[in-house]
Length: 450
Ligand code: PMP
Image 1 (cartoon, rainbow, N blue to C red):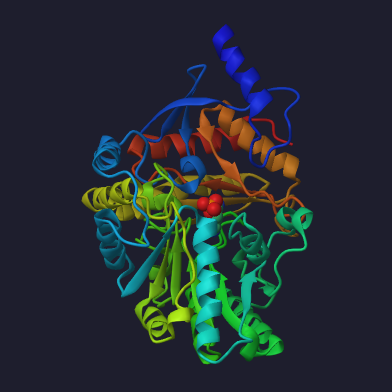
Image 2 (cartoon, helix red, strand yellow; image 1 turned 60 degrees about the vertical axis):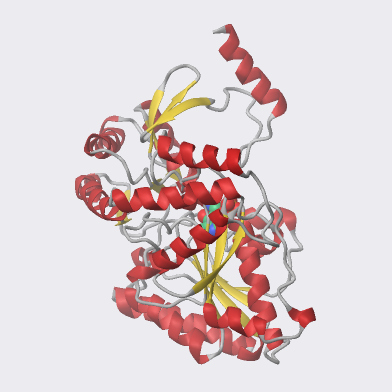
């Protein structure tokens, strides 16, 4: 026990945790092992990790194939920059094109934030090289999250994450995202979603199309509350972008790699993005890796410019050979085990079991696409006023008491920190899926909440 205590003491003394205030009482959970969908802390407590780490361990923990792929590559050739090339980067680019079902060029990075930054740079440079030097603005949606760097924070639509770091880079405009649970009276889902797509077009028109470079959006807003749009919204946004010569960047950092039941989230909606950004699930979180996939025609147009105008961008560690090799193996494994289909089936089964939660006075909505599940908590089902942050925090704590790591969205300032997130590894067993729904029911119907 003494040794365990010293880990907690050292952790408190030396590590600055993400997204957490300094904990005077208590301590962070210190995890030592993980297998399948389960993690074990240093006190040997086991939890089903229904957040896949941070929405990323899609193939599950403890996959020896992935470890071997990386370690063999580290022994053979651990690093070479992509100012030249190496075989794992080529292999992965080929595989990603297959998964994207289209011709895309792959630019590598290490994190979702970098992948989105890269997309913004490409969008701005593209327009500049096509005689539109003033097309620089990026439009995104309120409630979205696109990263922790200054430009990706500027694109993020959650005020609480941003205000302490202002001024942020200029040229980022936000519009309302469709929240199908909160449609105004008189609108059906499709009409409300189309009205929100019109808001996007209005923003482009008011800003002037000749100043707008790109729209960035997740197919489904994830960290901002699992907001699943009607199909018509995504299609209409694509149409609006084409009409005004605005590039469409789809952020697949969470939605990609089977999370929503397809290889990428945008594949649900029959659209063809100009740029697709990805990270997290690309390696199932085992090593840092990210990519910005750019439509071939955009890449070609960069080749037709003068020597001084090529893409002036370098990323030392982006596309590390071991990470690329591991990613190739990860995607093969997902194919062999049909993990996309598994996400679709298991997600639907969990949602079905969770319908019982609607009997609880504070469960306003249960939304699901694949293994991306959101439970929206409200004070009153008629007014839909969100519960206080303390209530959703209690739910997450009660889940942990029952052996389940669930998440919740973080934007307490906007009032929307009331959505419980469930996004387990896609490889979860049937027993794991049953465990998740049993714990959720026990939490809502046997725990004293609020
Ligand atoms: N985009 C989305 C949708 C994300 O959820 C995240 C991270 N949670 C990012 C971008 C940024 O990724 P990273 O933390 O790897 O920089």
